[in-house]
Length: 248
Image (cartoon, rainbow, N blue to C red; front, side, top):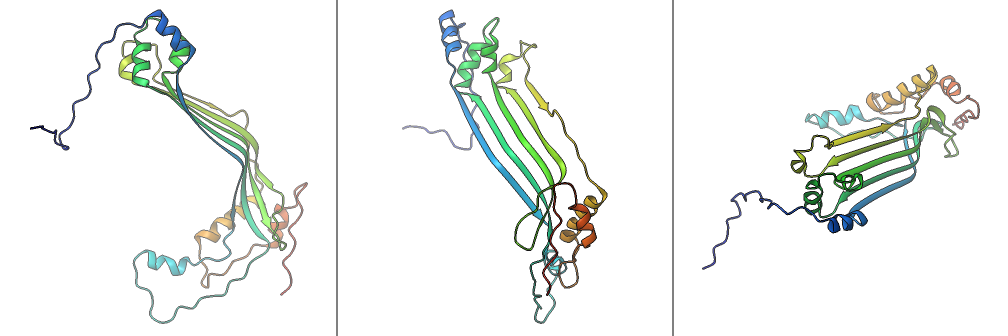
């Protein structure tokens, strides 16, 4: 009768049989073409907007989250109205590009390349997993949703900049123990320029936006922002002041 191996029994690690050194013809074929799996992801015109909280029910939700019993009796639900102008933090990115490449048939490739006395840079390059991250035109600033439902131009906090990150990781490092000159991992970060410019009114407005999410009022209503603070933030060159809210 046929005997099957039990599923729970750990399988021994496969033993790699020594292979004869690659011939010059095999090396030439590898130099011409090495199959690689490449994965790319590109995002264009990314915009993330975080507005100030128009209402906050932390005083009602936190006891429930913490496991406390809800108070008996009917729960009053306040009536909320849209608040304009509504400050917001906006992040804009022109383009985000992510690339990931890994050699196909890595065991066969690496066992061949690692057996060479002096492998070429091209062959060594394909023995790594490569990852690229490129960000173009990243900027952040304050904006405001006016009474017409439109966002004002950015009042910049972080001017536009670009950056890149590259990393590589050697495949099957146990095959390269006798080659101390071969790097196992490498990382390169590029940031040509970066700046943060924030005025005191901008910092105060950011603080008010954060507190609108973390601090709760008794009735959950919007605390509002001082109109003078908004006018100081949005009177920068090229940025129009937010229109006042319509009369009740």
